[in-house]
Amino acid sequence: MTTTSTAMALEDRYGARNYAPLPVVLTRGEGVYLWDEEGRRYLDMMSAYSAVSFGHSHPELVAVLVQQAQRLAITSRAFHTDRLGPFLEQLCRTTGLDRALPMNTGAEAVETAIKAARKWGYKVKGVPQDQAQIIVPHGNFAGRTTTIVGFSSEAQYRDGFGPFAPGFVQVPYGDIAALERAITPHTVAFFVEPIQGEAGIVVPPEGYLRAARELCTRCDVLLICDEVQTGLGRTGARLACDLEGVKPDGVTLGKALGGGLLPVSAFVAREDVMAVFTPGDHGSTFGGNPLAAAVGLAALQLLERERLAEQARVRGAQFMAQLAALRHPAIAEVRGRGLLIGVEIDPGFAPARTVCEALMREGVLSKDTHDTVVRFAPPLVITEAQVDAAVEALSRALRAVEAGRRRVA
Ligand SMILES: *Cc1c(COP(=O)(O)O)cnc(C)c1O
Image (tube, rainbow, N blue to C red; front, side, top):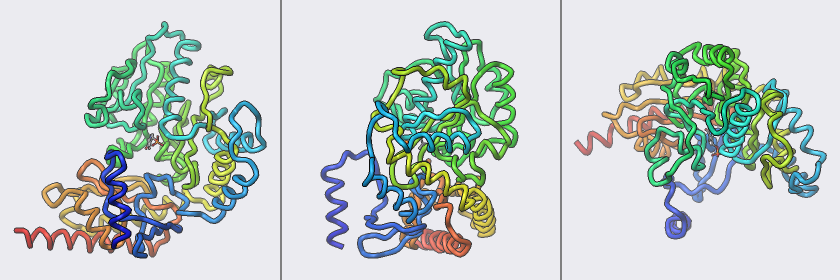
């Protein structure tokens, strides 16, 4: 107990207070499990916001990381390396697109997509200088840079951080008529999450993405899908756009692309979109480094070889069916695709944070999103029995919260 409080006290004393973590100090992870300082084991239902899709410390990915670190880790893009080409080739194969630009964090991939879309607008579409507009849905989450929070609809993400970059227009998510009305001759891109993750696992109406694809094609607007969270098997398909048979003009990837070991992201796009970049236009000291490329390639190969998208589809269906079968009055809704699942908790019952704290005591780690939603997004390697265990833990946690409420009342 003393070590636990010491670790938390140090974070509290010396860290910026930009997070409010659950009171647990993790020291080890393996597969779907995490362990705290007292050796207590937890099922991980967060997967670091989907960055740990392959499970913690996947032995094959760790081996690639260690071997590559011992051989060659960072060179900058001033030189070629033997690792980058194969990684880029696999990124194009996985997405069905033509060229990839590697970065590190998801936010950087998004910034890259914004730059590409704007420059495409000026050089290819013929939009007058500095007039490019990008349409984004209400409820979007795409990272924390000033440009990105500038087009967020979340007051807290923006408060105190302005002035913001112009050139973004918001429309309601899932509303194709609103998108059509918002498009002007200056619109260069519609930048959209196929399923909104941070907004609370919001699934748009069936056919939304397909209709957006047709509209964008007709109006000469790029459809760029932000798949930093939904990509790489998470929703039961390689990309969440595949669920609707939609091929975007560009896609941002991140999170799971680093195999749960390091930050790796990319913007992948159609030839004529990526063609706007010429040497010196854009870059990153660490983007595309051999360490990241080796791990990213191994992660993409593992996704195919272990059929993790299929795994997410099957286990996700089991998970959602069992959550629905609880028929618990506190559960207002269960939604999601694959292993990206949100459980909406009736706010009259308890805040989602309270449910997460009770889940923690039952050996399951998750985090609330937007006060009312508990996220269930485990590593895609989760087994049938582990899904059973997570649902049973939720059932016990809800009973414990209920008992606590009765005691208070
Ligand atoms: C997490 C996330 C990002 C940002 O990724 P970071 O690595 O945190 O910068 C961008 N888009 C979506 C959809 C995300 O979920």
